[in-house]
Amino acid sequence: MEALQPRRVLVTGSSRGIGLEIVRQLAGKKNRPEWIFATCRDPEGAGAQDLRNLAAKHKEVVIVPLDVSDVSTIKAAAAQVTEQLKGAGLNLLINNAGVVGVTGTLENETPENMSEVYRINVIGPLMVTQAFLPLLRKAAQETPKKGMNCSKAAIVNITSLAGSIQNGFQWDSAGITSYRCSKTALNMLSRCMSLGFAKDEILSIVLHPGWVQTDMGKSVGSPPMTQDECVQSILSTLGRLSEKDSGTFVDWEGKIIPW
Image (cartoon, rainbow, N blue to C red; front, top):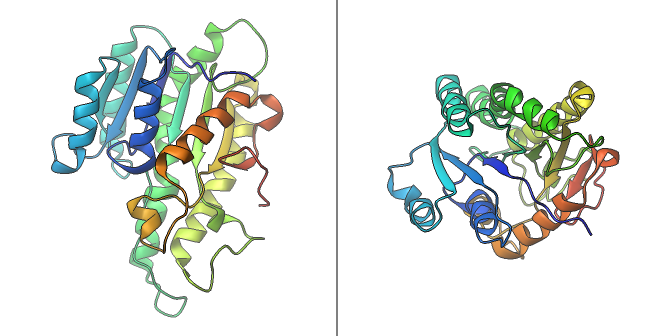
């Protein structure tokens, strides 16, 4: 089994939930990355205290202000990371930040809510990927060996089973129309990335982390999986991926999910 060994990683939405746990587990690895860029909207706010505590213990964790709904902060974050890397590339971009939005029904869904959810869950990951694409390309060029993997250069977009058109996951208990539609759109965006960046040997996948005990997960019921269990499986799965997996929709264990 291949081990996940990216030297330089960036994770959006790192102040809590799955994003924070990814940063925590990467920083705790024996062969930890050289740099872990942990982004969040308000690094100085009360909600980022756990992340600040983590960064204080691990010098490789760098907190970067970034709001995926604000292009100016995305560009500023890319400039900061580029300067920090001093000519090196970025191996792994995890677009984790997202929202459920105001839950409701088909009858009372509003254009305002749908637009906001799309702005964060779909447009945000696209803008972040565009901003960091030069660094991902540089990382791919730094590795002479042909092929793709998540230690070389990869984009991982965190989606949801709710975005599977075929599955209809938990429709009766949680309609969340805007969220479902946004994640389906993110799935297509990831597929486009896999096609568009194939020549650069940048792997692109969309990953369902499972129903996890996070604030978001608990907002729609009682999730069975802990954050620790979830992220252990995710990192193991990312370590096994190769070019044959680029453009696929997988779960935390690497199992294919129907579109």
